[in-house]
Image (cartoon, rainbow, N blue to C red):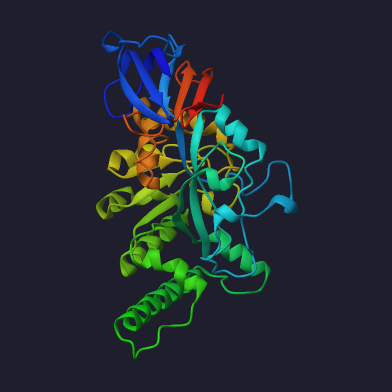
Length: 385
């Protein structure tokens, strides 16, 4: 398949005003300028003259498929509010591929999402990176687990205060996380001793601990839901204490400590970008948060936090950031290349390069323009819009 005569944005090189991309068996086989192209006889061609060709959009944080559209408790599978520590829960066991929001995501050019548990629990469970097409989640998985969800601040406090259970303070939330990480480290040490010494008993199997082992080993990133600057600092403190790979999710007040986050090499997924200040910890929400972080040198991606912002409006989130001072192509990188890198799936998606998945979004008009229309979308080389 060849897409020809488009404005090509590979996200790894300069924009090619008259470009093409070809793909076969679900993988990109070539990208370049039209004057370099020699079409083979009988090739399948789609002429996209005047359209912008981008990698399929990547949402680095959402709850797509976890909270059903227009439904209530029956499809609310994102928060297990019976235990504040649930690392053993897996997003892939709750995602509903038939939620119509998957179709709307595809129609908006979004081809990959990181989705998973909400933020009710101090440790919520395992996030998954999935494609937005399929009838069975097993066939949609890009990487699972892709991260472990942690949450700080108002959400765990509010949920468990209503139940008159721990945690109802920020101290208790942090203490619960720290305690479980200590336990996981001790569990790992006992397992290693048991493996090395036949006279030493290995610990009893514990699914919670087993689920945290990749986090303790630095193999699985910790995604910390944190809005206030002090909560962000707590996440960084815990991550440093245990040597975790980590990402800050939302980072609403990250602009207050942007220079410090840059010094620490902290990565932040900002968003949702538009919406009301619906709770106290959003009081200092500002649209230029992402721009301030970028200017400070922080690695940033932009998310919808679907359903907070519907998935198809991911380009609108990026457009609002561009309006506040981010270069348009950098805003697009935050929902393609940089989002894939922060999510840990850049080996497969996020850029248009030979060998990567043929996930491609074609826009009539620049995607940061409100009037832009999605002309065509391909996932794994198959047209889905």
